[in-house]
Image (cartoon, rainbow, N blue to C red):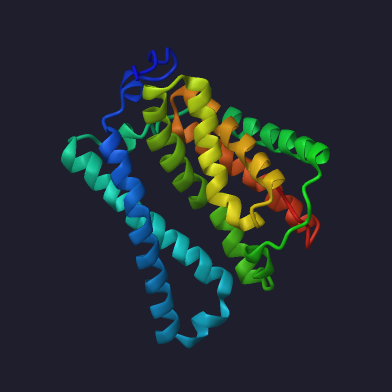
Length: 246
């Protein structure tokens, strides 16, 4: 298969990312041991500090944080030591061409679009384990802070900073954006008991983030957009306790 034509919107480095297929496969394969290690560390902390056991939401987020920390440590080593490039530059973490305010506005518009799509699709109410853990103000605050800060940064660096440029290199931009959105939705599938309507809605949001990343060449733009999107739904959750959000 011949690589797709370079995007006229992406910086030249992002049209042809440093990493190749073997690097992508390595990082995908490293995800499982990173997840196992993060889980074991959280379980060990619960055994050492009994009070930790009562903070279930914090444990879940700690596991996610440790997972991303280990995964990005491996990615940093790959980019820095194998290719001699700066981590943030290689992943396209640059200021959005039209500023962060526009990226945030696009995130709010995307949230509105997903809400509109949800009205049409009528996703069923499904048990959401993480929301079930938000029974105290501390857990609610920690989850909210993660959802609008580290969460979007980590996910956008992985899906739109690392994976998307590689996909664009091998297939046309439109299917690459849709595929990265589908993989992003699959990551969140367990949170919604694999309800296909919820997965479709998450996939639409992921595709929107990918489109902005592709058009601007800025992973930071996608992260800001993602953060604003999450903020809308978190604010909705606070306004309607017990809601089931897409």
